[in-house]
Amino acid sequence: MDKITPDQVKAWSVGTPDDWAMEAFKLSKRDVYGDPPLSRFEPQHLDKDYVERATNDVALQLSRAGVRLASVLNKPLSSTKGAAPSTPTTTTAIPTKPNDNLTTQTSGGIDQFQSEAEAKVYCRTGTVVWANLRSSVYHFAGYPSYGNTKRGAYMCEVDATRQGMHAAKAEQHPLAAVKATFLSNDLTARSSDTAFKVGLLSHRKRTPRRTSRQVAVGPMLSKKSAPL
Image (cartoon, rainbow, N blue to C red; front, side):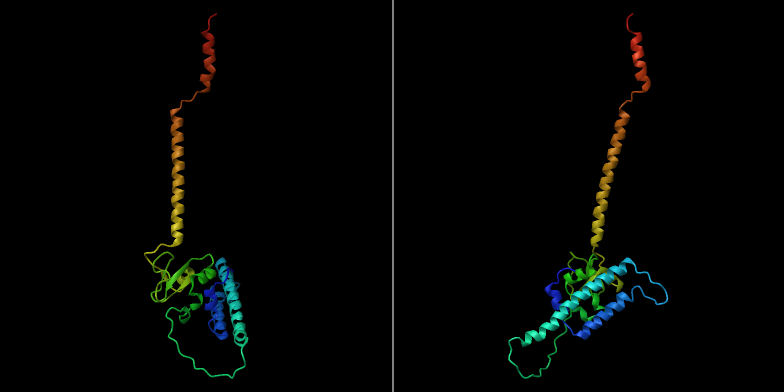
């Protein structure tokens, strides 16, 4: 897995062990047992997509576990280091205004990320999109709405599609641009090859061929015309 960023450390350290356990449970329920649906009565074939998704899940969960374990250990150590014993005090938690941009407050937020870097780690070779969680429309990198809608999250395109979202109509898929460039280059190469073949054929038609009969008769005619 790539290097863990400070944004990922901050995002993964939020919550309690119970929250993290439920997060792992939902992830396994969706990816391990739910797609494809497993059966205990019939053999199950695990395709390439399943293996790739499982590999991404394992890498992501191991990274989250390391960050969260360090966070749990650092809290008591940092609070007791160099501090004099004190009597415990009771504090009242002040409710904070919900952040409209936090994806953990939406259903299916396990595969939704607050940072593009975190989404790229999870998606690996897949396309990362910005999903507008209100309109169910996702946007590609390079377009104005990418990462800029009020309520949204970075997601893998395959996960966004699975949740019923669709791409913005006015935006072109990054792979489509690559494919168009490839086809254009291929067409240019084919055109050049065709022009070369046509030119070669035209050259052959203009150049007279010397037959074997002409080669054989030539010396004979010159021999008869020689003086005795």
